[in-house]
Length: 293
Image (cartoon, rainbow, N blue to C red):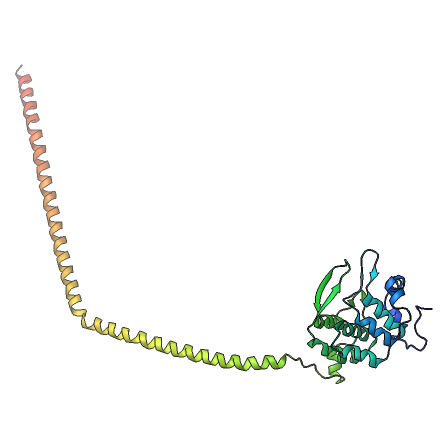
């Protein structure tokens, strides 16, 4: 009897609201100690006190698949089905962040697409930190806006399969909902104007520097060109004189080389003549001596 849904509860997605959580996890919640001790005979008014005592969010953890108090309270809300005004107050209050997370999770499971976008998207501006427990029992830090984004876009969160909702752009095309305006758009617009002014100032400074450098480069070029115009004739004369001197020296060297070669040839020819003449005389004398004999 304690695990049955309230008699006057309305069906959600065509089924019993408790069936939105899988049977295995639901049976684990029924066997959990927190469910038996803390969630027994809870009403909508007493549920608020239990939600204020939450210290983290999560699904199931450990090898025995133990449910977290957050998931137990979600199933209790599906069982007693509180009024919509109470759920909206859960979402809008700003003092207790885990109460807000509980109300947002229940609204995502039960509410239609328009209500999900209407009441959950303003929570994108909440950047408070939440403690989340994973399947291994370890804790990690997430932010409220991340938690809401996963609620609207993921298929599974806290080990619960989230019902499908209509895409936002389709609702916008059907003019059922207005386009979402981010709170950061005003902050983005102001820096753009400031950035444009800074860019204009920087470009003006760069243009002034470039023009100044061009002028400074043109002045020494003109001076250098004037110097070159004044001093071409002496350099040209010097170069021509040097060329004449080099040509004369080359001619003189060539002549001296030819004379040296010619003198060497004469010496060689004289040496040969001297060396050949005594041999010829000896040969003639020997031939004459043999003929007399």
